[in-house]
Image (cartoon, rainbow, N blue to C red; front, side):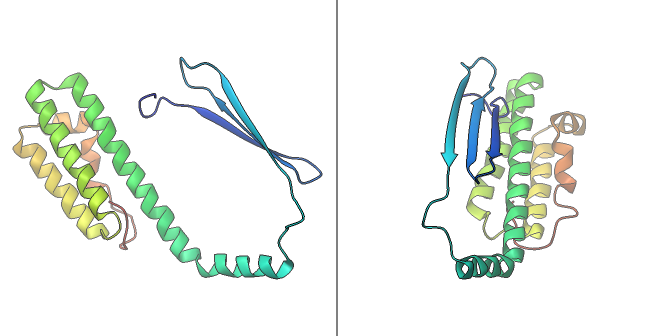
Length: 169
């Protein structure tokens, strides 16, 4: 298993004139043995009726706002996770042991809080938690210049411009 950000998989989708879909995934990760998996998807006699298709389209339209909110929540979750991961990784390179341990502890605390509150956290809750984390970094003796180098200066404006709705922190 490769560290986060180092795995690479190319996925291709080909649709032929007979409506047969071919999906191929190729592992392009550095140092891995080139491997490929393919699947062929064909239609069969259990195709959907026009009524079933209309019902599915109506459901999709009815749930459009909910789906957009879900997509935004996942996007915020992934951005926050990536920011914390990069900060911890960079801390290992540039900080002394005590500062590195403090950064790791604070980042881990934010990650756990996010996992426990991802379904109920509003943007105001997220902003308050992240602002509190900046104070924790400061109280732990991490200078602002190091926070900027770790990418943690982004944390103060992390949720600006986001909808003030229930999102993942």
